[in-house]
Image 1 (tube, rainbow, N blue to C red):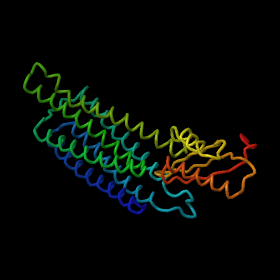
Image 2 (spheres, rainbow, N blue to C red):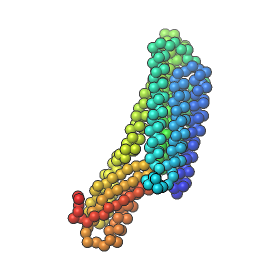
Image 3 (cartoon, rainbow, N blue to C red):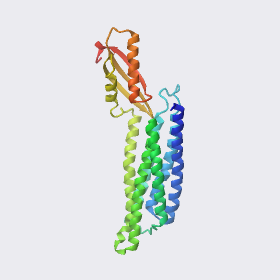
Image 4 (cartoon, rainbow, N blue to C red):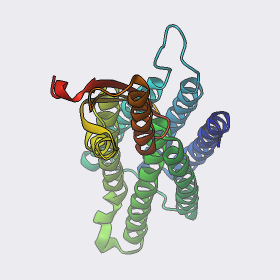
Length: 301
Protein backbone atom coordinates (compact mmCIF):
# COMPACT_ATOMS: atom_id res chain seq x y z
CA UNK A 1 0.00 0.00 0.00
CA UNK A 2 1.43 3.41 -0.96
CA UNK A 3 1.71 6.31 1.45
CA UNK A 4 -1.33 8.16 0.05
CA UNK A 5 -3.55 5.09 0.41
CA UNK A 6 -2.24 4.55 3.94
CA UNK A 7 -3.08 8.12 4.98
CA UNK A 8 -6.55 7.71 3.48
CA UNK A 9 -7.13 4.54 5.50
CA UNK A 10 -6.02 6.26 8.73
CA UNK A 11 -8.33 9.22 8.09
CA UNK A 12 -11.24 6.88 7.35
CA UNK A 13 -10.68 4.99 10.60
CA UNK A 14 -10.51 8.23 12.60
CA UNK A 15 -13.68 9.59 10.97
CA UNK A 16 -15.59 6.37 11.66
CA UNK A 17 -14.53 6.68 15.30
CA UNK A 18 -15.95 10.23 15.47
CA UNK A 19 -19.30 9.11 14.06
CA UNK A 20 -19.53 6.13 16.42
CA UNK A 21 -18.68 8.29 19.46
CA UNK A 22 -21.33 10.84 18.48
CA UNK A 23 -23.96 8.10 18.12
CA UNK A 24 -23.18 6.47 21.48
CA UNK A 25 -22.96 9.76 23.39
CA UNK A 26 -26.41 10.82 22.20
CA UNK A 27 -27.99 7.49 23.12
CA UNK A 28 -26.39 7.37 26.58
CA UNK A 29 -27.41 10.93 27.45
CA UNK A 30 -31.04 10.25 26.53
CA UNK A 31 -31.25 6.95 28.40
CA UNK A 32 -29.22 8.20 31.39
CA UNK A 33 -31.52 11.19 31.93
CA UNK A 34 -34.64 9.07 31.42
CA UNK A 35 -33.60 6.35 33.90
CA UNK A 36 -31.71 8.54 36.38
CA UNK A 37 -28.78 6.11 36.28
CA UNK A 38 -25.49 7.67 37.35
CA UNK A 39 -23.67 4.72 35.83
CA UNK A 40 -25.15 5.45 32.41
CA UNK A 41 -24.66 9.21 32.81
CA UNK A 42 -21.04 8.53 33.76
CA UNK A 43 -20.74 6.47 30.60
CA UNK A 44 -22.37 9.32 28.64
CA UNK A 45 -19.84 11.81 30.01
CA UNK A 46 -17.05 9.38 29.19
CA UNK A 47 -18.39 8.93 25.66
CA UNK A 48 -18.84 12.69 25.31
CA UNK A 49 -15.19 13.33 25.97
CA UNK A 50 -14.35 10.34 23.79
CA UNK A 51 -16.24 12.19 21.07
CA UNK A 52 -14.06 15.25 21.60
CA UNK A 53 -10.96 13.05 21.74
CA UNK A 54 -12.01 11.31 18.52
CA UNK A 55 -12.28 14.71 16.81
CA UNK A 56 -8.82 15.66 18.12
CA UNK A 57 -7.49 12.34 16.80
CA UNK A 58 -9.06 12.93 13.40
CA UNK A 59 -7.50 16.40 13.16
CA UNK A 60 -4.13 15.02 14.32
CA UNK A 61 -4.17 12.15 11.81
CA UNK A 62 -4.91 14.59 8.99
CA UNK A 63 -2.14 16.97 10.07
CA UNK A 64 0.47 14.27 10.75
CA UNK A 65 0.24 13.09 7.14
CA UNK A 66 1.59 16.39 5.81
CA UNK A 67 5.13 16.12 4.38
CA UNK A 68 8.13 17.82 5.95
CA UNK A 69 8.61 21.49 5.10
CA UNK A 70 11.16 24.22 5.81
CA UNK A 71 9.70 24.87 9.27
CA UNK A 72 9.19 21.21 10.21
CA UNK A 73 12.17 19.30 8.88
CA UNK A 74 11.16 16.12 10.70
CA UNK A 75 7.59 16.26 9.45
CA UNK A 76 4.40 16.72 11.50
CA UNK A 77 4.20 13.32 13.21
CA UNK A 78 4.58 14.72 16.75
CA UNK A 79 1.04 16.10 16.57
CA UNK A 80 -0.20 12.51 16.98
CA UNK A 81 1.71 12.21 20.26
CA UNK A 82 0.35 15.58 21.39
CA UNK A 83 -3.23 14.58 20.54
CA UNK A 84 -2.86 11.45 22.69
CA UNK A 85 -1.79 13.70 25.59
CA UNK A 86 -4.85 15.91 25.05
CA UNK A 87 -7.05 12.79 25.18
CA UNK A 88 -5.48 11.89 28.51
CA UNK A 89 -6.31 15.30 29.98
CA UNK A 90 -9.93 15.01 28.80
CA UNK A 91 -10.30 11.61 30.41
CA UNK A 92 -8.97 12.85 33.75
CA UNK A 93 -11.59 15.62 33.68
CA UNK A 94 -14.27 12.98 33.14
CA UNK A 95 -12.99 10.93 36.05
CA UNK A 96 -13.05 13.91 38.42
CA UNK A 97 -16.76 14.47 37.80
CA UNK A 98 -17.63 10.76 38.03
CA UNK A 99 -15.83 10.31 41.36
CA UNK A 100 -17.33 13.47 42.86
CA UNK A 101 -20.92 12.59 41.95
CA UNK A 102 -20.59 8.92 42.89
CA UNK A 103 -19.21 9.71 46.36
CA UNK A 104 -21.91 12.33 46.85
CA UNK A 105 -24.61 9.77 46.03
CA UNK A 106 -23.09 7.13 48.27
CA UNK A 107 -22.80 9.52 51.22
CA UNK A 108 -25.81 11.79 51.01
CA UNK A 109 -28.24 11.42 48.15
CA UNK A 110 -31.18 9.11 47.91
CA UNK A 111 -31.77 8.73 44.21
CA UNK A 112 -34.31 6.48 42.55
CA UNK A 113 -32.61 4.70 39.68
CA UNK A 114 -34.81 3.11 37.02
CA UNK A 115 -33.00 -0.03 35.88
CA UNK A 116 -35.22 -0.35 32.83
CA UNK A 117 -34.80 -2.47 29.75
CA UNK A 118 -33.67 0.67 27.93
CA UNK A 119 -30.68 1.03 30.19
CA UNK A 120 -29.56 -2.50 29.51
CA UNK A 121 -30.25 -2.16 25.80
CA UNK A 122 -28.12 0.96 25.34
CA UNK A 123 -25.21 -0.60 27.19
CA UNK A 124 -25.34 -3.77 25.10
CA UNK A 125 -25.43 -1.65 21.93
CA UNK A 126 -22.51 0.38 23.29
CA UNK A 127 -20.43 -2.73 23.96
CA UNK A 128 -21.14 -4.08 20.45
CA UNK A 129 -20.15 -0.79 18.78
CA UNK A 130 -17.03 -0.42 20.95
CA UNK A 131 -15.86 -3.97 20.18
CA UNK A 132 -16.21 -3.30 16.46
CA UNK A 133 -14.49 0.07 16.38
CA UNK A 134 -11.69 -0.80 18.81
CA UNK A 135 -10.74 -3.80 16.66
CA UNK A 136 -10.80 -1.63 13.55
CA UNK A 137 -8.68 1.08 15.19
CA UNK A 138 -6.15 -1.39 16.59
CA UNK A 139 -5.75 -2.98 13.15
CA UNK A 140 -5.15 0.34 11.37
CA UNK A 141 -2.95 1.68 14.20
CA UNK A 142 -0.69 -1.38 14.08
CA UNK A 143 -0.57 -1.34 10.29
CA UNK A 144 0.49 2.31 10.10
CA UNK A 145 2.29 2.74 13.46
CA UNK A 146 -0.15 5.48 14.53
CA UNK A 147 -0.04 6.42 18.23
CA UNK A 148 -3.10 8.65 17.86
CA UNK A 149 -5.24 5.79 16.54
CA UNK A 150 -3.75 3.45 19.13
CA UNK A 151 -4.83 5.87 21.87
CA UNK A 152 -8.31 5.97 20.38
CA UNK A 153 -8.41 2.16 20.30
CA UNK A 154 -7.36 1.98 23.96
CA UNK A 155 -10.17 4.38 24.85
CA UNK A 156 -12.80 2.23 23.25
CA UNK A 157 -11.38 -1.00 24.63
CA UNK A 158 -11.75 0.59 28.05
CA UNK A 159 -15.33 1.53 27.21
CA UNK A 160 -16.16 -2.14 26.69
CA UNK A 161 -15.16 -3.03 30.25
CA UNK A 162 -16.63 0.09 31.83
CA UNK A 163 -19.99 -0.52 30.10
CA UNK A 164 -19.95 -4.10 31.37
CA UNK A 165 -19.35 -2.81 34.90
CA UNK A 166 -22.35 -0.47 34.64
CA UNK A 167 -24.50 -3.41 33.49
CA UNK A 168 -23.51 -5.20 36.70
CA UNK A 169 -24.48 -2.09 38.66
CA UNK A 170 -27.92 -1.93 37.07
CA UNK A 171 -28.42 -5.64 37.75
CA UNK A 172 -27.76 -4.87 41.43
CA UNK A 173 -30.39 -2.12 41.39
CA UNK A 174 -32.88 -4.47 39.73
CA UNK A 175 -32.28 -7.20 42.30
CA UNK A 176 -32.67 -4.74 45.20
CA UNK A 177 -36.02 -3.57 43.86
CA UNK A 178 -37.38 -7.13 44.01
CA UNK A 179 -35.77 -8.22 47.27
CA UNK A 180 -36.00 -5.53 50.00
CA UNK A 181 -33.51 -7.38 52.21
CA UNK A 182 -30.90 -6.63 49.54
CA UNK A 183 -31.60 -2.88 49.58
CA UNK A 184 -27.87 -2.15 49.89
CA UNK A 185 -27.59 -3.10 46.21
CA UNK A 186 -29.37 0.20 45.42
CA UNK A 187 -25.89 1.71 45.78
CA UNK A 188 -24.52 -0.64 43.12
CA UNK A 189 -25.02 1.96 40.38
CA UNK A 190 -22.81 4.53 42.15
CA UNK A 191 -20.22 1.88 42.99
CA UNK A 192 -20.20 0.85 39.32
CA UNK A 193 -19.54 4.47 38.37
CA UNK A 194 -16.51 4.53 40.70
CA UNK A 195 -15.19 1.37 39.06
CA UNK A 196 -15.63 3.04 35.67
CA UNK A 197 -13.57 5.97 36.93
CA UNK A 198 -10.83 3.67 38.25
CA UNK A 199 -10.59 1.89 34.89
CA UNK A 200 -10.40 5.18 33.00
CA UNK A 201 -7.77 6.61 35.36
CA UNK A 202 -5.58 3.55 34.84
CA UNK A 203 -5.72 3.66 31.06
CA UNK A 204 -5.34 7.46 31.03
CA UNK A 205 -2.15 7.28 33.07
CA UNK A 206 -0.71 4.72 30.64
CA UNK A 207 -1.64 6.89 27.65
CA UNK A 208 -0.24 10.02 29.25
CA UNK A 209 3.11 8.44 30.10
CA UNK A 210 3.48 7.02 26.58
CA UNK A 211 2.67 10.41 25.05
CA UNK A 212 5.12 12.30 27.26
CA UNK A 213 7.81 9.69 26.54
CA UNK A 214 7.38 10.24 22.79
CA UNK A 215 7.24 14.05 23.08
CA UNK A 216 10.48 13.98 25.13
CA UNK A 217 12.14 11.88 22.39
CA UNK A 218 12.36 8.89 24.71
CA UNK A 219 14.06 5.84 23.24
CA UNK A 220 11.44 3.23 22.19
CA UNK A 221 11.75 0.16 24.41
CA UNK A 222 14.15 -2.41 22.97
CA UNK A 223 14.88 -0.31 19.85
CA UNK A 224 18.63 0.04 20.41
CA UNK A 225 19.13 -3.68 21.04
CA UNK A 226 17.13 -4.66 17.94
CA UNK A 227 19.05 -2.25 15.72
CA UNK A 228 22.47 -3.32 17.02
CA UNK A 229 21.63 -6.99 16.52
CA UNK A 230 20.41 -6.42 12.95
CA UNK A 231 23.28 -4.15 11.90
CA UNK A 232 26.14 -6.11 13.48
CA UNK A 233 24.96 -9.23 11.61
CA UNK A 234 25.81 -7.53 8.29
CA UNK A 235 29.04 -8.63 6.63
CA UNK A 236 31.59 -5.81 6.71
CA UNK A 237 30.24 -4.20 9.90
CA UNK A 238 32.60 -4.46 12.87
CA UNK A 239 30.52 -2.58 15.39
CA UNK A 240 27.37 -0.47 15.73
CA UNK A 241 27.29 2.15 18.49
CA UNK A 242 25.99 5.62 19.45
CA UNK A 243 22.52 4.51 18.30
CA UNK A 244 19.80 7.13 18.77
CA UNK A 245 16.14 6.54 18.01
CA UNK A 246 13.31 9.03 18.20
CA UNK A 247 9.67 8.71 17.21
CA UNK A 248 7.41 11.38 15.77
CA UNK A 249 3.91 9.98 15.43
CA UNK A 250 4.16 6.95 13.14
CA UNK A 251 7.64 7.88 11.91
CA UNK A 252 11.02 6.77 13.30
CA UNK A 253 14.32 8.63 12.96
CA UNK A 254 17.50 6.63 13.59
CA UNK A 255 21.10 7.89 13.86
CA UNK A 256 24.10 5.61 14.42
CA UNK A 257 27.83 5.17 14.07
CA UNK A 258 29.03 2.08 12.22
CA UNK A 259 32.64 0.87 12.34
CA UNK A 260 34.01 -0.84 9.21
CA UNK A 261 37.37 -2.20 8.10
CA UNK A 262 39.66 0.68 7.07
CA UNK A 263 41.31 0.97 3.71
CA UNK A 264 38.28 0.07 1.59
CA UNK A 265 36.94 2.29 -1.16
CA UNK A 266 34.26 4.89 -0.57
CA UNK A 267 32.00 2.93 -2.88
CA UNK A 268 32.38 -0.25 -0.76
CA UNK A 269 31.68 1.67 2.45
CA UNK A 270 28.61 3.23 0.83
CA UNK A 271 27.29 -0.20 -0.14
CA UNK A 272 27.62 -1.39 3.45
CA UNK A 273 25.86 1.77 4.67
CA UNK A 274 22.98 1.02 2.28
CA UNK A 275 22.70 -2.49 3.74
CA UNK A 276 22.63 -0.97 7.21
CA UNK A 277 19.75 1.33 6.26
CA UNK A 278 17.82 -1.58 4.78
CA UNK A 279 18.36 -3.70 7.90
CA UNK A 280 17.03 -0.93 10.16
CA UNK A 281 14.03 -0.33 7.90
CA UNK A 282 13.12 -4.00 8.09
CA UNK A 283 12.76 -3.55 11.86
CA UNK A 284 11.21 -0.06 11.68
CA UNK A 285 9.44 0.24 8.30
CA UNK A 286 9.80 3.65 6.70
CA UNK A 287 12.42 4.82 9.20
CA UNK A 288 14.63 7.77 8.28
CA UNK A 289 18.14 6.38 8.86
CA UNK A 290 21.41 8.33 9.10
CA UNK A 291 24.63 6.29 9.16
CA UNK A 292 28.01 7.71 10.19
CA UNK A 293 30.69 5.34 8.87
CA UNK A 294 34.09 5.23 10.56
CA UNK A 295 37.23 3.04 10.20
CA UNK A 296 37.65 0.20 12.68
CA UNK A 297 40.58 1.79 14.54
CA UNK A 298 38.18 4.60 15.64
CA UNK A 299 35.99 2.06 17.47
CA UNK A 300 34.53 3.64 20.57
CA UNK A 301 35.59 7.15 19.64
